[in-house]
Image 1 (tube, rainbow, N blue to C red):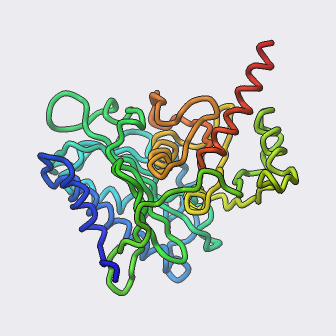
Image 2 (image 1 turned 90 degrees about the horizontal axis):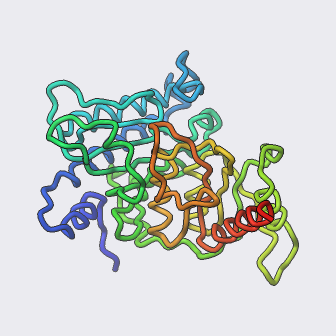
Length: 335
């Protein structure tokens, strides 16, 4: 008979692995879990409540902000801002860093997040999610954090993960010691361990890419996708196309089943700090890989809060094969 474990118990056990732990990390993640429960509740009744549709606001990326985007942002900021464990936050929806509320305690952690990834799919009842990344403060002195604390490479993340709001609500996260998934039991109001030590297959059978952008792809991407479509049964091809258009949804499916997600260059569309880096930490801890096509995502030094990068992420062998197509293209260009 398997033991029932809540997310709070699991987080507490993870923190105990580090000598001198103060409990601040457990408290931070507990506040984040609380905010996800609140967001999940609103997502699940979105068709009944006056929370569907768009606002009149445009975010820093030129995208229309939905009502649930705004609600998720406010919920996380309220839950974390007064928790006492963070010194600064940054969000995909905010142009600048988010300071802690006046009078609140300052902590040693930095939180970066995408409050509602895939929010354009809300009105059609597709799965959406919240992505988060946690770093330690590196700027000198106690008190408020700074831009320096936010612009750290993904390799320095203390923890990363996501919540996915779909047929069930799940939390998937890592602290650098494997990847674990928890499913929300609405009758208990608790996230219970449902996917222990997730390992993604070394090679998949699925590719996820927006084929409507084919004319914008570079040559290596075109050749790679053509390769995946070839009928070579002994080599496990053709691959199946599965693309939802919600990064969390596409990533979560491929994490569990194996496969590769591609939003290629040259500049990319996805944000390094709020999407690429946290999911790269998750996939690497599960045995996968994340790359721009030429560089490991976790090695990138961020230059700005809203820096965009190409993202190739998923099963390790699939990502390596895509990188090989890029290397061959560079070698040919250099001849």
